[in-house]
Length: 123
Image (cartoon, rainbow, N blue to C red; front, side, top):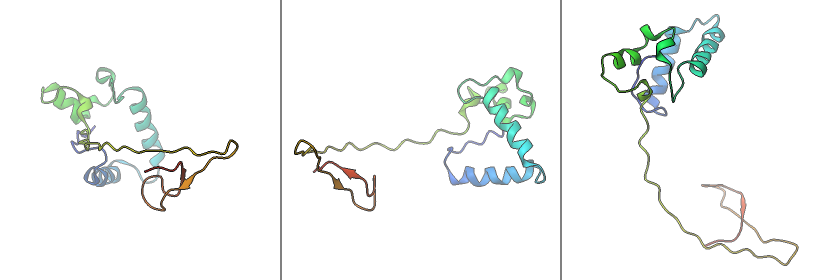
C-alpha cells in the first residue's frame, strides 16, 4: 500500500509501520481496520500473485502506482527481500551409544543453538 522498500525484518520498517498505524487506524475501533487489512491481504493483495485489477484500494496504492509508471516490475517487490547471510557449513561426528535398552545422551550447553536440549554425543 505504501511501497516502503526496507527489508521486512528491519527496525526502520517496524518503526515506520507503527507510525503509519497511528495515522491510519481509528484508536476507538482498531479491530475493524486490522480485520479488513488482513482480509485484503488474504484474498486480493497476496504475496505471490496480487490481483491489482480487482483491488478496491489500487488507486491509493503506491506500489500499484509505481507499477503503472513502469518503475517496478511487480508490486511483490515490496517490502524488500532481506539479504541472505552466507550459510556456513559445519560437520560433526556423532556417536550413538546403547546397551540395548537405553541410549546415552548429553545435555547441550545452556546458551546458544538448541540450548539445554539432549543430543547424542558428538565432536
